[in-house]
Image (tube, rainbow, N blue to C red; front, side, top):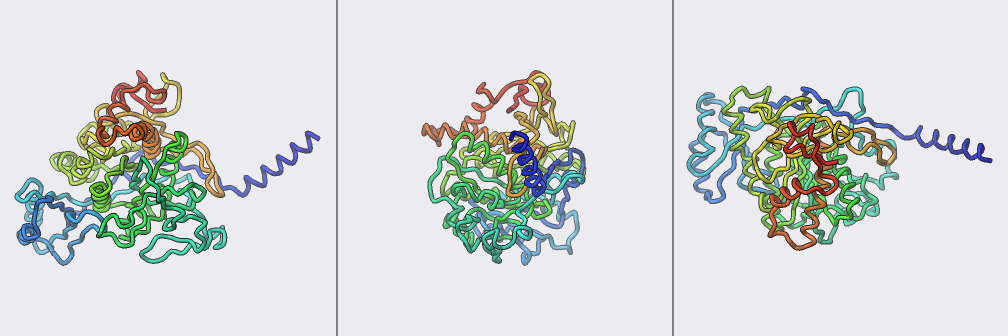
Length: 467
């Protein structure tokens, strides 16, 4: 009888696993397309001081060699941000002088060269991030998803709980909200959860038909993930939140396209969007930034590199969140790269903003045998967290194994930090206790999952690591 049951179990296992796709996600850990930032010197990202009047802004534009007919604004969020296109009839010297005159010049405007970069590309031997396979499952299996132009994905059967339905967006008031700036979210993978998306309906006047978050790539309210990275990062965060029974909401913000490429302009708009929501609701507590960019191969000027680090628009937007939100950012995946060195930085982790928690990676092992993974920096990087994501968990119709990268170290840390942040919210010590204070508390307590490893001391601040 025992042999018969064993045989049945073996046959069942073969049937089940033959229908599951095993996906090994391994991000490239050396120089690749992800580390090559493409600067666009034909345009400039501009932010106006909040005190500037429309007349002052118009006067400033008249002095600049720009084609105002091509000026862009963020489709949702911060009206003080614009993307200018230079008039090609003027010389490069005049353009450079005009750009330099913006930051620190009269009127209080800031100007940055825009650029394009990408998420770490995947190991060519591994499969890409898996999204819900609508063709394989068939229309009925997905509750008939409808992708409507300019709208969120919504099924005809609301019980599926896709983005844009009341099943997906919570109408309750949680104690903790996390914004995830990434590739969006494939909510179908979380359809069995209680409603957990942060509602932005009616919060900002200049965002049309908002439900939850915004897609700055396509300038719509459809934040559906057509890549996969953002969905997986969110899954890691949710696992930690659920383990600690934290009452949470997620605000998905899409800034990377289906190929994993993103623009500085879209990320600036995303941070401006968060800032504007904070002015109204003041309830976005953590921002997860599982991405990074640097200029080691694209900029030769040390002055310009330092300018991006200390005076960029993105840094200003992060600084303005200091009393409200903590930004958890990844250090990068390039082995043996010290991002403390000028030119090696990985932004936004390398910005000097106090409300950034910069996360490196460590390989698994005992306390004494832990080794750093990816980029590091004893000054820049606050701690290290597991470089490998969840070893195994179920997505519908697939198993994902051993994803690696500081994207996952960051998501893991966001989940752990949320536990401490949540305790302050429960005790009503917020907003009196700023995120920076909680960050310092997080780094200085011995709570069972924040530790020190002597070997990591020269790589990360005080050798601290999360496990």
